[in-house]
Image (cartoon, rainbow, N blue to C red):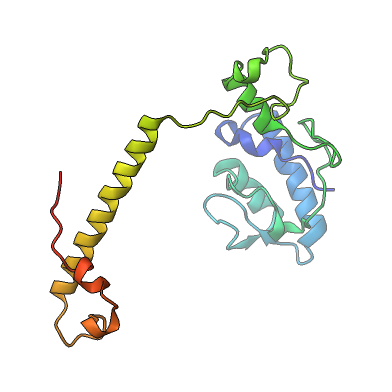
Length: 193
């Protein structure tokens, strides 16, 4: 089991006893797993796991420079995928219990959603009745108007691209390749702003 990595968050206070104890536990673990030649890669901010050093040098570097903040999976020091931490400081959910963090966040932000009370967290957020409202006539007309404007803009863009390309360019289609739609597409559209 890998030692607890909570000490890595204390890089700002490297004289803290918890940080110093974490460094020693890390060194014990790393030398037990990968220190066959008396050296391991140094995970300090200065070396960034590129140089190997002895236990004393790595320990000093971790105390002086600190450990790389995002080096939370110690693959250069023998940690394997699926290996658990020995001293878990946070309560973790079991694998058979699904995580509902998103549901909790939504309930905290919108307690009025489906009439739920903030104290009643046992009900499922998706179990409530959602009344679907049909769009009104004004919304339908405004959406239709927006789609018409998008269509006119698209025609104007096509017109611009067809006039920029030379007549013999392979991407400029001639009238024979269209069945009458070219006349409609190439008409100059008016721009509305």
